[in-house]
Amino acid sequence: MMFAQGFQSYVCPGDVISCEDGPFTVLAQVVADDCLDAPDQRQDGFWPSLYANAPGFIGPGPNHCQWFAEAQAKAEAVMEGWRKGDWFYCGIVLSVSLEGVQLASHAASLWGIEANYPGTDNSYLTEVANELLPESIAVAREALARLTRHAAVLEGA
Image 1 (cartoon, helix red, strand yellow):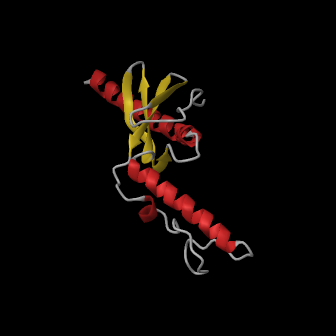
Image 2: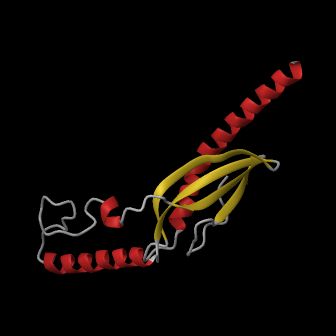
Image 3: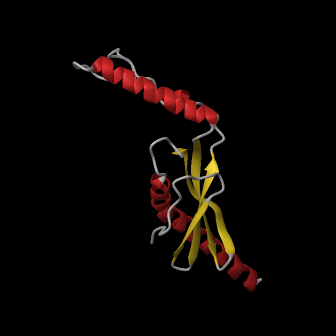
């Protein structure tokens, strides 16, 4: 099973998509990342460089000065958008319930994902949710098995 309905092209913290997987209802939620590091602090090589040993080296070539100028302008635009709050880092957090009973409020997650990043449509957020789906179902099945064992013990008491 997969999330048929994906996240919108513009998301806010708290946005949710859902799907059914057998008897389970799975919610995938956009949660703001609490790490406040700027993009250039999170990503080695964020800023372009003309130096071969630098992480942001753009490569040699006859147009390297033009490539550098374009990469520098893009990096500056990305940083400015982040500073203005046009895009943000988030986590996709999956929770699983069964017949309205939540089995796992945080069954699976991935953090440090760009949301509303310039030039993207947020489709990656749905891809992440789909990749986390099997893990979240496994966690829910384990929780259900524990509850079933506890119920059996209580019935026998």
